[in-house]
Image: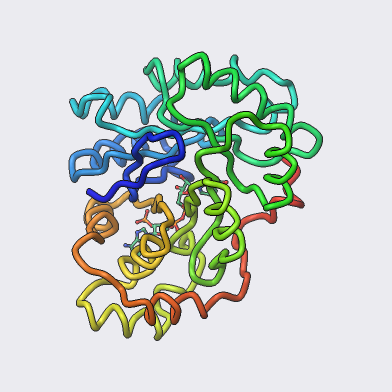
Amino acid sequence: MKEFILNNGVKIPAVGLGVFRVNDANAAYETVKSALSVGYRHIDTAMIYGNEEEVGKAIKDSRVPRQEIFLTTKLWNDDQRSGKVKEALDASLERLGTNYVDLYLVHWPVRGTYVSVWKKMEEIYRAGKVKAIGVSNYHPHHLDDLLQEAEIVPAVNQIECYPYLAQEPLIKYCKEKGIYPEAWGPLGAGQSDILVHPVVTEIAKKYNKSAAQIVLRWNLERGVIVIPKSVHKERQIENLTISNFQLTDTEVKQISSLNKDLRLGSDPDNFNF
Ligand SMILES: NC(=O)c1ccc[n+]([C@@H]2O[C@H](COP(=O)([O-])OP(=O)(O)OC[C@H]3O[C@@H](n4cnc5c(N)ncnc54)[C@H](OP(=O)(O)O)[C@@H]3O)[C@@H](O)[C@H]2O)c1
């Protein structure tokens, strides 16, 4: 399976499984169990998804050794405001039934706290309970602020990213700083017509692949990690099987040109939960 290497040398599988909106406990458990059984070794959850316990149980019951799985969870905004970063991580670890996570992300840049919170993220990294620390939904201006104070450069910036929101400037910025871009909503979050766009379906036909495989591969070609969510085993397999073909530079550009800066989620500058 294709892996990328983060700025501290930690390896991350290029394709992971996201579990946002898999709220029903049994569904979350079965989804992760199924994903691990078909070969996923990277799971992306968050405290706010409310399914850390089921994710942890599925990992345990899968019998895949914990050290073979790259597990991400995220620090929620309330815990940033309270400054209880270490406590929030400990609570996540408890729910996940593990003594470390591979990647701990600050979920959103909460105004007024995201720089001081980063100092606390650095402390927990040094304490060894997380293999890497990063951020999510950070614009360059948030990262500029953070990097002025930071001793540790975030390993990852997890951002909304699919062809209608190609994020080229932000990806370029992240790469210049040594921060790995990671795409959430890489398939358009079930709310977009991207998977039936003729540019995508024509390329899919050429390679005998699905539209989903093409848009995921497009991000991989640009050096972007992807974490598609599916509760269906067949789709999980489809989304994971994208290492056996390559897009040409022209095709990557064709897909990037579909960009219309169209967000399906919130703009990080206006997100105030
Ligand atoms: N950091 C953040 O703020 C943030 C925000 C949102 C999401 N995320 C993370 O990113 C992950 C992915 O984003 P997302 O879940 O919003 O959206 P997504 O992965 O782009 O899309 C998921 C949707 O696509 C469907 N789907 C999956 N595979 C498919 C395929 N091969 N063909 C057609 N449809 C397919 C899924 O349906 P089925 O499940 O029915 O197959 C679901 O409706 C999340 O699960 C979460 O871990 C992070």
